[in-house]
Image 1 (cartoon, rainbow, N blue to C red):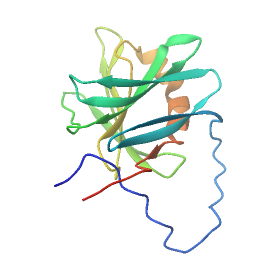
Image 2 (image 1 turned 90 degrees about the horizontal axis):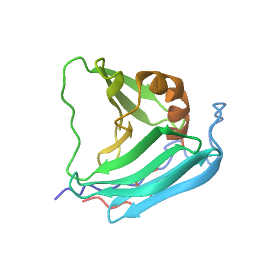
Image 3 (image 1 turned 45 degrees about the vertical axis):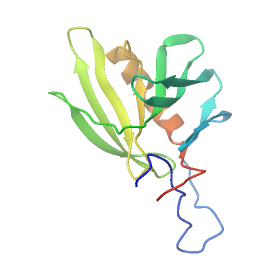
Image 4 (image 1 turned 90 degrees about the vertical axis):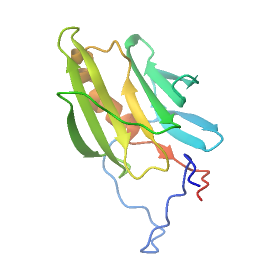
Length: 168
């Protein structure tokens, strides 16, 4: 049986006890933590942002919603999709990215040109123990997405998934 949970990060195969130098600036601020059953995540929320825990039983998702304190239009969710995550659509563009923490993600984007919003702008975490996805709010405009994408990626560069893991 496979659980939709988390697995521990393997130890450094080189045996090094000194972390590698990372010159990428990372946000400093409050730690946002969410743990429930096999779902386990944390990220650093920078000053000027706030967060809350969220659960949607109808979608079988749970995790963290975070947004800019002074601009509610800049709102994102980092969720675990407990029954798995998939995408569909025409005009979806996918790009593989490496975050500041070394995690590989896929950014899937699709614009709703009629509404001027991002039909989809999901960041799917590769090699994560479960289906973890970061997404903007449904009403985020393309301009707001473009203006805040780099800041979101910096925040996601602090993500920890599966710190208290169980695998079978």
